[in-house]
Length: 105
Image (tube, rainbow, N blue to C red; front, side, top):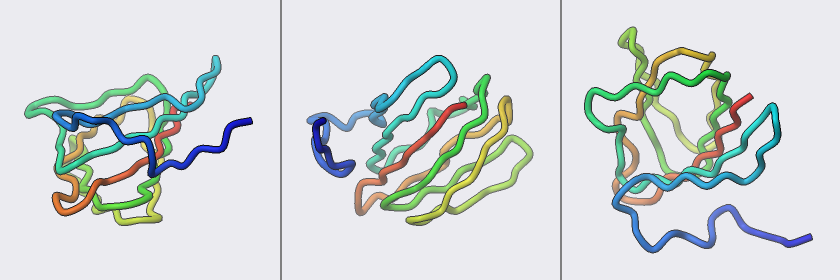
């Protein structure tokens, strides 16, 4: 066993959001995502084949859905995004790094 900390071992370069797979099996994938003032590329929508449970651990973010609904997330907030529900990250905190956990199942 190896003890690790979700807020440590940061990448050197934050030109893009950082995605790191923590666990992956046939049915699920758990990712750590780190944003640093990032947003999804213009005119791009995530459209996952699986449901996604997303939890914001630190920082803040605004998620926009293709129906115009916006959700502001703060630490501790979590939601389930159904498969094929198109969404994008409109913005993340620019004064601190934003840490997420995303479980695709």
